[in-house]
Length: 312
Image (cartoon, rainbow, N blue to C red; front, side, top):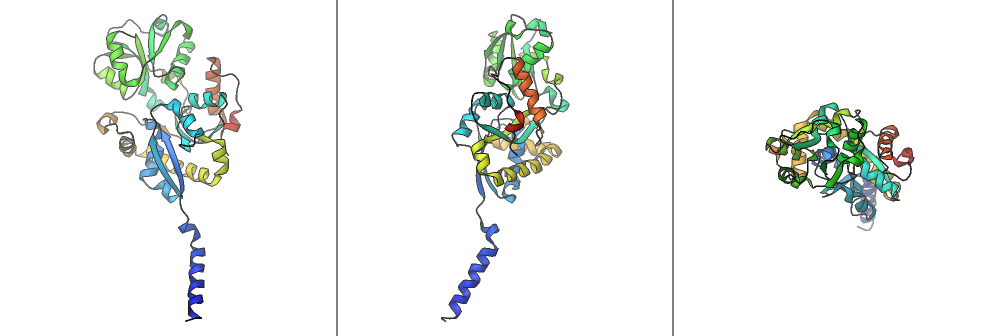
């Protein structure tokens, strides 16, 4: 027995060593996204076990406001979040050391009617110039949709300072437009479709149609400190998102089902919506487009070096 026990123990140690990778705990990552189809790639990667296959234990949590994501990243309550480019760049401009770890979604002609500016039914507002002097509700001043609507106004020769913007949450848009509290709302599906189908308003312009394709709508970001300290996790996350993006783009109904379970938005509501194009690749030039747009609107104090904002 005295010679047998050490032999057994040695064999057990050897087995443990040889299976070290298999027995290693998956890296734990909490990912925060808002209720949007733009994070469908993360939802699919969780449900299909893609993260798990690549050595990640990912928890996907719902964030109420996109503007809350940078603070959540810095506090480490989430390690990766899905901010809009405008929220991300304003946070960086304000001194937060954040980096992009992967692309999430991008603009495309196929989803250009997923957002727009809706006016009250019977309104005389037809053109960009007609918005001068009018009150327009937007889901956040400086938010993704408001920034792009302002770009549309400027592209059509209208000074956005001549338009009165007020913040209106998505759930209250139908009511404030119906009551006449605002002349128009900058909205997106599924809320926009509900406003139109209820007869409260009509779409005056789908301003996303004027945008070039492959410009980021949502990106996956983390703090630079966390990304630098966890390079293998970043690589595994990026690989997982790329694989899941193929599923999202090839099987939109499956993506809607995953988003429905994550956001708790009824699948009946999501069924008529276009799923945002999943795009895991993000170049400095594509992010730089947003810098130029925001700079023209006086939203940035300085122009960042976008190449340094994308984690290698």
